[in-house]
Amino acid sequence: MLNTATAAVAAPPVTAAKRLMLSVNNIEVVYNDVILVLRGLSLEVPEGEIVALLGANGAGKSTTLKAISGLLKTEDGEVTRGDITFNGERINGIDPDQIVRKGIFQVMEGRRIIADMTCLENLRLGAYTRRDNGVKDDLDMVFSYFPRLKERTGLAGYLSGGEQQMLAIGRAMMARPKLILMDEPSMGLSPLMVKEVFSIVQQINRDLGVTILLVEQNARMALQAATRGYIMENGKVVLDGTAEELRNNEDVKEFYLGGGNEERKSFKNLKSFKRRKRWI
Amino acid sequence: MTLFLQLLVNGVIVGALYGVVAMSFVLIYKASRIVNFAQGEFLLIGAWTCWWLLTSWHLPFWIGFPITLVFMLVFGVILQVVVLRPMIGEPIISVIMVTIGLSIVFQAAMKWMFGVFAKPFPPIFASPTTNLFGLEVQTVYVVSLGISILIMAGFGWFFKYSRTGLAMRATAFDQQVAQSLGISVRRMFAMSWAISAMVSAVAGVTVGVVNGVSSALSIFGIKVFPAVILGGLDSVIGAVLGGLIVGVLENVAQYVDSQWLNWGNMYEIAPFYVLIAILMIKPYGLFGTKDIERV
Image 1: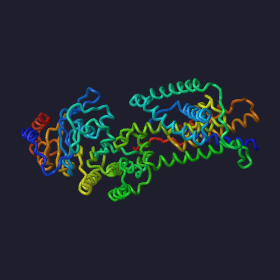
Image 2: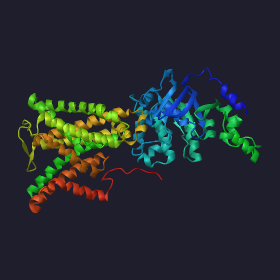
Image 3: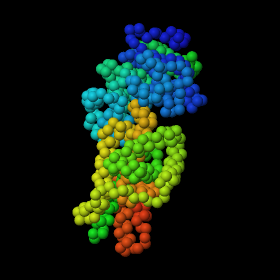
Image 4: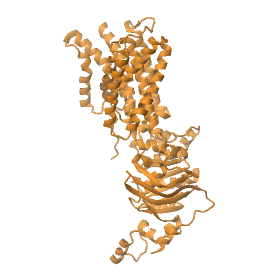
């Protein structure tokens, strides 16, 4: 039972061979000057990997992503302590539109596509910050990933949930970012669609070399797709390690993956479950 | 019958001008949800600026007019940055109140600087009227119709195909999403005010050339409301059609009034009656967007 605490302290160092792309160092986030949401959160994203950020509702996962992308500003939130470094450059406090230009693109929770525009217009907006001539080719590339989007010529608001998610991912691809922050891509999708979305996430990571920081409720799928994982609770990281380690961790199994030890089925053990519901 | 046709043509031409002003009104509304009560004063300021350049500096029209447009662009940006940017994040109703305040201030400032009497533009075209299919029409109106159509086409292209136009629509739809795409919302706001002020000035100068420049010009700012609401507050095409309808209605109402009713002033109120009738049937206006809701 103590293994969680030890794992949290002795986090395996990121392999030296991979360059660190993003590092979040002990940040504290406050909303409306009073509500403390993140209390000293740290995490690292090595270049070229998929890193999963897991945790219960209200743990502060989305807040973490918004702190990185700068969108916190639009919700009256602020990083009051610690710093966020992207490719060696400190980026906290910068306006969100400037952060996009630096190569970080957030796919927000709930898709957030522009409903009264067509698919094509949504995708072209993804490339808003780009000035190069590759936009046309990238449009074809996105359509080759999502052929269904090419057939939909009407307003994006009328797409199905899955199609909207694909559009949101495609829009991120159009920006040619170095790092994509993905907030709950599986939200509200059928199991089959969830599978498809995750395979696309892996494909993008592999084909385009985009680093991905993935926030998910669906821990099982996320840990299958990711290379590393962090588990958050109450605004802090409580456990981290490679995806493999997390998949095999007893506590993760019990809290997030379901099942766990067969013996914990009686009422007595349920009590122990309740007692152990907090990590630290 | 010729009188009727004459009024119809006049209606279309004036309506196109209404449409242009309505479009610039919609531009601000679309980008920032602000109902701009100072739209009429943009016409006024544009017209006075052009008049001043032409009469005090004796510049030819083809130099004075572009300078006016550039001035209005800068004016729009400054207005947004100085007065409206600090209001970002405040309730929309407060911002709307500020635009009412602006309209009063501009109105007074223009009276103070240029006086209360209408002043005519120096003659610009060789012959003041032209013959259009057998009808006598003011030359400046014909030119203005051309310019109106150009501006409308320009707006259509801008919102459909240009990068900035798309970004403005995105900003109108959801500011947070726009920022997540790398769009600077503040720049979009400034741009929408600048373009709106400039386009309004085109209409202001045109009307000024025909009727002379006076505070009465800002009536256009009020006339724009039936046009815009008819078309649906957030539709550019709607604004154009709304403008045309209001323009034609005014003139037809005047014709009906002068021929049979003799009530006087039908011309002023007819558009508003039709506005009410249309809104009863189509509450979103003719082209207003209903929110798409997936159930």
